Length: 178
Image (cartoon, rainbow, N blue to C red; front, side):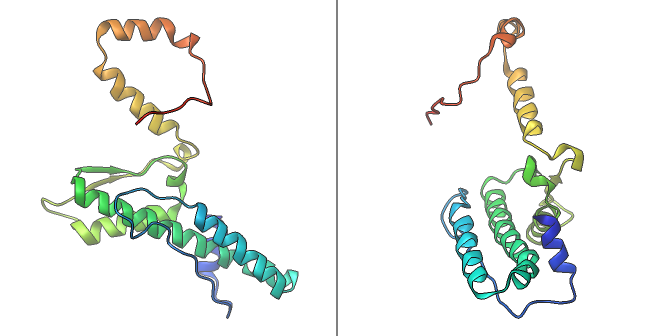
């Protein structure tokens, strides 16, 4: 997806067809986001475009569709991140997980942090992103969470964990109460 978006962004030849996707939950209070409505909008837009265009014309629009989808996602994620920073005032922001592989998101979050909080001074936010080889899944986030949990465990809890970790069973139907 991001490669197609980059292809469109660097292309000299732009289509006369305007494509714009919604920014779901951008103005909603809090930090929740969902892209199910956005994905549905992409589905409907592509169905309409397929009806109007030849297969060749539609294929030429794929990079633009990818670019517009990416921009909608990046807008929502970066603006929600800035909103969270303003509310919670962390010293460090970490972009991790599979989404951190997206160069556009990395750049936009960094740009917005610099614009909002500056590069120097008391308001400086440390912005961390993993090396690209560590962005394929959420293993980094799980490892960090495990590390901090381990640090809080008593000696007895650590001993129990070391003895019992091999017998853990995953339950995909587990309900989370919150």
